[in-house]
Amino acid sequence: MGSRLISIVVPVYNEADSLDGLIAEIRDVAARDGLEVEVILVDDGSRDASWEKIVSLAQSVQGIGGLRFRRNCGKAAALMAGFAAARGDVVFMMDADMQDPPEEMPRLLAKLDEGFDLVSGWKRIRHDPWHKVYPSRVFNKMIGWLTGVRLHDHVCGFKVMRREVAKDLRIYGEFHRFIAVFSAARGYHVTEIPTLHRARTRGVGKYGFTRFFKGFLDLLTVTVLTRYRWRPQHAIGVAGVAIVLLSVLLPLLAWFSGRMSWALSGLHLGWPFQTTRGLLAMLAWPVMILTPGLVLIAIGLVAELMVAQRPPDRLYEVIEKAGWCADIEPAQD
Ligand code: UDP
Ligand code: MG
Image 1 (spheres, rainbow, N blue to C red):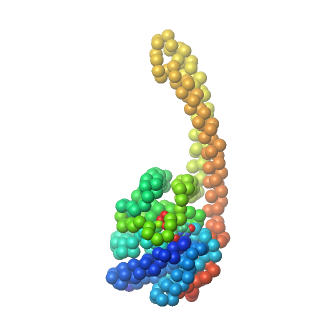
Image 2: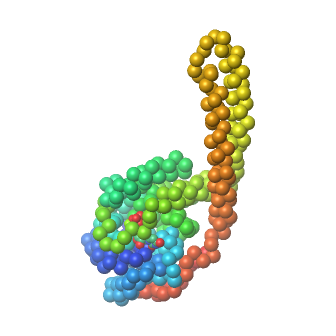
């Protein structure tokens, strides 16, 4: 491919200490591989000196642009602002913390050129604490089961996509974890390749332990939004029907097995005939206890469907621009 423009979107939240190094590495790779790049640093309401850093980088380095949010709106909103501004034929997303080495960009690009629309990084050898690594494996497996999009590392912040994929995304909340799922649901060809990963040496991680609970609930939402968007009752109602059936069937079976064991007792049949009744009666309890929880989750899903129907008006508000981004009017919908 001739000289195509590559946009690199970087969400920035309190990452002042990483930005110099990140830009230096991006420039090294671009120079070495002859890539034409533009960078969009999106300051997601940082409270440290990130914005001052972005402004000074935008003044001294060509191709650096910055957008600043009034407040912290989340990584998904930061990515959306960056994607809206991007002018490239190909768009990267990359974390600001330098955990994703820019030197992997040419490999991701080469994979994209094999004919994919989105290539995700995969932190195969991951330098994060164990309490992040293991739950994340389970989470990725669950995403694969529920959505049918099987990647090892959906959450990886290092991805490259064709321009139209980035422009088609409508992510908000914490849906940045499901970019591959949304893109695949639109019919884009999605894949992953193992990429190098480094430990965070500057700044601190932004997501605590609750990420897995939120991530799990979001997974249910994303599954409904991508697979059941036009037939939500097939997801929510089927769970309801299962509960109704269980609550009718279990007591009935318990009663029936009670009569059976009485009839069969003369034959001195041991377990399971004598215990089935108790077992089934016991099973009825979890059904009753689970039901209120499932009802709450179902209500939550309905709320999510309402939000998804019309993306929130003000996902973010850009209050300052720097570098080449000063000239653009980021689209917002
Ligand atoms: N980030 C952001 N807004 C937020 C939280 C995080 O823009 O509200 C950025 C953050 O600065 C970093 C990226 O998202 O560039 C990933 O964050 P982090 O490294 O904390 O996530 P982890 O690597 O722990 O998944
Ligand atoms: Mg990180």
